[in-house]
Image (tube, rainbow, N blue to C red):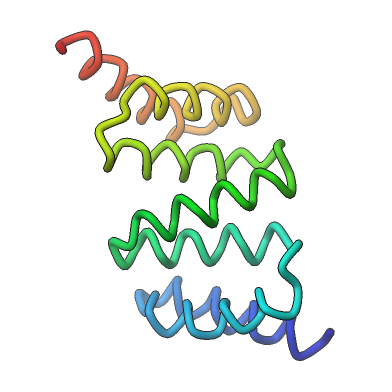
Amino acid sequence: MKNIYNLFVKGRKLAKKGRPLEAIMLLEQAKKHQPQKGSIREELARAYYNCSLYFSAKKEFRKALDIDAANDYAHYGLGLCLLKEGKFSNALGHFKIALAMKPNSKVYKESLSKYEMILKEK
């Protein structure tokens, strides 16, 4: 268990240092050992997203939500992935859920406002 936690921590640090590909390698190893750990799935999804691997990111954000539907960041991240697919209405739904879970989040508020305006223009 300690080794898996170390993989997760090292992966997270690499991702925060702007090295998401290296983070993915470690986080995928952690996921193999603990596939039902939402925090691993979320961090892995972030790393995939930051590598522009949106399909993989979406899959991991969805799995994180299967594990814990109250994961506000997974809703937000899934919304970002859906935007990349041009699915604005679906993305807005996830932004709204994330904001409802964490109403003081400036990032969630700004994203929701920005994309609501874009959707109205269409």
